[in-house]
Length: 382
Ligand SMILES: Cc1ncc(COP(=O)(O)O)c(C=O)c1O
Image 1 (cartoon, protein in one colour):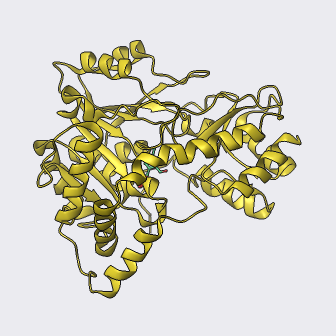
Image 2 (cartoon, rainbow, N blue to C red):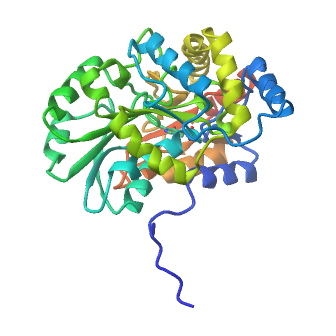
């Protein structure tokens, strides 16, 4: 038989799988993949046990458990001052990844254009491609990795259906400023461009900065899918529970996709998260301090290294500038680093459409102190 041609011919094994496999082979410390090596809050874990053993094991409502949607709406009000209707503007999803796919599929069609900023989280482009649309890449360049708004203005055409933002940004650890959002407001005013704001690291913003959620800006919120992930907030990435906020007309289309993509998300996990959110409001607000300590601990221990470091402004990622150490391309440098220092990191070039060489690699500091200490010692030794 002639098998169908690939719909995603340029997608291969992700760099995360490649680096993790190499890390195992070389018994290296794995700071490449973005997940914590510690568990979520005990009360949350216990609540899941309780709901599983008390029968919360059948399909949840398509849009999510009402109590969880109400808690999400309350959180948005508390954190960003926006009133959202939990009945028709909130959907619980199977991770932010599902929300991103559903949002793109809901509004992006054949021959549309979608603007993304490179380096970009790797699920955006395949979702755009599978919907028959074209990805228009705008690079974020070192050292600031900030958005060049003139390039955005120049990239917009009558075919631009959507622009995807991610703040705090993976992999660079940058955050968008109030000025950025105000400029965006003026750029999209009077257009029919839909925005997708990936805010999975919304509670991990450092040094007193505040997260510029699109929820804070009514003129943006009225045209935005805003996506977040409980995996990042509660250290439970493997649960794959996230959510999407959007105005009713956009959410109605989103739910048409969601109901045939996954229909609903694991019931006991939703029930446990809702209960935890009801009883515990400090976790979110303490998360930035928790990760800032880890960032500072890691960076303190890298002070004696030959890497140059500009502290990350958000997320649990830190970029290391290795240009003083090597002029290897980043994909070769991470392999060299792994073999010589025993630490796995992630190159940035796979997240640029044109394999841009920045001279930076990314590490994840969502790890216990002893791991960070050991990694710091190894990185200082090269
Ligand atoms: C920027 C960004 N968006 C989305 C996701 C996916 O989140 P989830 O695990 O909830 O699907 C991640 C996970 O690493 C991410 O870094």
